[in-house]
View 1 (cartoon, rainbow, N blue to C red):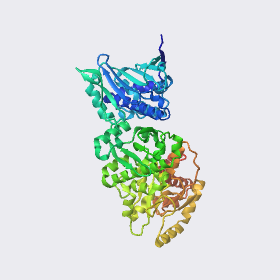
View 2: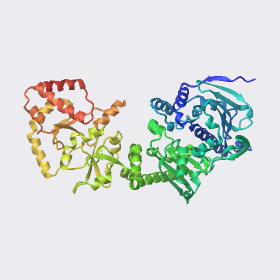
View 3: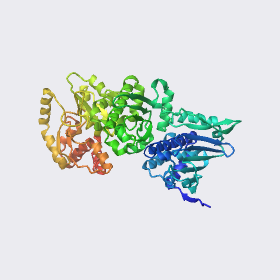
View 4: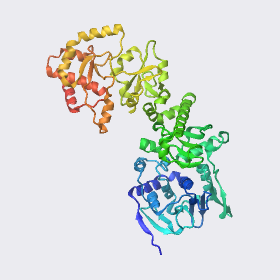
Length: 621
């Protein structure tokens, strides 16, 4: 007699189970989509493994998924004849969670006050959704190629422990048996299960079978209840928008509709099909995991699933795209290492990038509301392409939008083409400023001369902007210039006036340099200021203070640099410094001029307490 072994769940699994069962009550039906998705993956894996080892199919080559129910026992069973699992794989896949992404899943679920079904399935935790409707789950599995005696039975009530025992299983594959909770009778009806399969799993590429019903009871006769065909292989004329959306939701584990999609078949020396989707909001793993947790596109070769090959099929900056690529010409036994060096795949990747950028451009041109939705969700991710994709830099730049001194407040709606279209006669540069917030950008003293002259300035306040703009030095033949960097270009009259003012202010400039000492690299008269007393000026290649501060906060060692202080000699505060004979008060005033310029530029004060004391002394007088 075999005795079952009792094991404790890994702590994080217990957390997942608790959160899933208590947070997804409004999306209970999700369990069936996830279990069918897992069964489909198991069939896909077996079909791939059987290319090299045909004996794994062992006379049972028709892969399928069966969904059955038993009203008397109050169970639902999802069974597949796919690759199956060994005992070690059962423990690894169900008993433990190693993914760092799942830790982010837990953190997000813990902080979310509302249930969010988008989270399930995106970190491989979809199996646990079974406990939303079941108070006990039994898994019976046997690995393809293993002996009948190598079967394994896993069982748990989801409360911290599970049991494992060996069992004889005559057939390969996996069966998941859900013992339903007392109030979940709705899922014991055939029409309800079938409607969920139609809604969420109709385009699973394997037949999903259900028993026929007679006198409200299941019979031994099976019926295929899904389309059981790869949607992307059909002619576009035969696919409705509802079909596309249904397939997207199944593919992306998303309850929301896709924003847009593109479906193309390329024929010729290299033939392949692509079906690519833009989500309407960021996939959860993109928000939480960023560049390291992406799922990317599914790669098929002649309808055989190969891998989730995000790194090979799309560049990093398009990691939010979901979809399928089905190639005819790649070798079926292709490995990830071969993929990385495969020229045919490079051509497919280039075609995918082109299709996605075409789709985004079409949204920008024909459906501005949808484009605005897309840009709010993925604009910052798209900006990474400016540095990463030199070949498409101009196309990506054309899609970027920013706030502007002539825009609609903080709304990022002004494109570079919009800016160029409004440029004054004789202006040949695109001016911008970077800051760590819109308020800091629009209120920067460095904008004053531009506002006075009616020159538009783009306001870039997203964290990625300072890094991105380092790779975007020119667009449509126009140079991009930061208003805070370098010396402003002046006409002959402006240069003459600047020289006169600087000459007249020489004593004041010397006084400030003496008072500030080695805290500044230089002090000079500003051509930027009209109302404010001072601002910082950066060299063309100097990092913006707000970015340097963020990098220091992230633990990076940043070289210290001495700022250049620009002043407005006509301002009353500078007149006061000039007239101040008390050296201590003059030093306080000079320090405040520097520190307020640093604050406005987003720099971190070296000694905030000393700044407060100085400010108080000046206010008291």
